[in-house]
Length: 157
Image 1 (cartoon, one colour):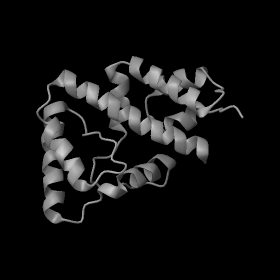
Image 2: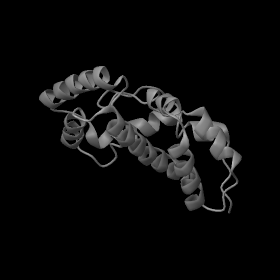
Image 3: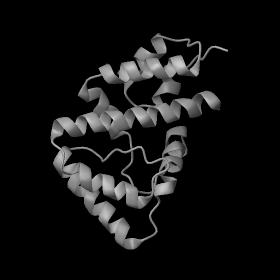
């Protein structure tokens, strides 16, 4: 059965209007695989402003996600494995997030699905040493992972 998604559906997966519009325009898709392929191609081609629009919609890692919409529910689920109960780790994540945002000008984005809080903290610390170009590549790759997960959730609903 073909996969047909609206721009609104796609915006719950990635807040870049350009990405959502371009992906929707190429549908319907014969399969989830073809949707994921088009999504990845479009995401790889959008400019940094579009990537920023997408990442600005993401909550800080380790913060409690509020909201009742689909995107908020997905964020809660994606970050659940990295939920922090250890106050030391929580404090280090908060501090790391602040330093990251000062350094790069946006939230620390990581596909947290399946990662522990310690894994996230290690990645955060390591990425603080990146230059802007390297970090932008990593952010784009992490965003692509998140979008891919959300597309699968959307199609499987």
